[in-house]
Length: 205
Image 1 (spheres, rainbow, N blue to C red):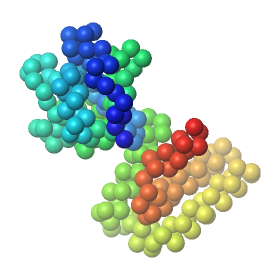
Image 2 (cartoon, rainbow, N blue to C red):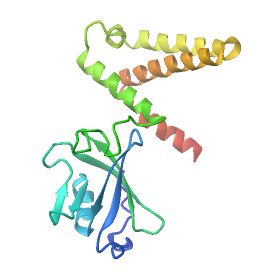
Image 3 (cartoon, rainbow, N blue to C red):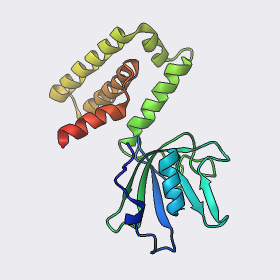
């Protein structure tokens, strides 16, 4: 998915003494994780290895994110800005991006807005793998896809009814229930939320 149309020569490397700011954003949650600098060598290495690599201005060398901590950044895509002197880098992080062990260098808050869906998807995935005792998610997964699909249907009907005769709070609560069970169904069917977003994106286009 890496944008192979970006040519290293097309970027403006002269504006900041051979460096370009790289804004790192989580591909799933859209949360901004950190900012670093790339020189031409770091840019090329990031594309070749699929792991985001920066140029350290203090150590005067390349460094691949996670080389010490193990919390690397898998490259998904890079997009230059309108002046070709800044990069927006979409990644899949393997752990916290901040050296303070926070997910983001810009505070400890979770991803805002729709990023909550990606966070919920990750929690469901963890429950799916670990199957903790006395967990509603565990119970539903063990009952199988038919039961999960039934719950999606039930929640869809309840949301529809709330839309006709319920209050705003009823609608919000039923919509949250539907989204939760929909994410469970997607996991049981081995479909990532981002795949659904890609379908919507194609339709919008």
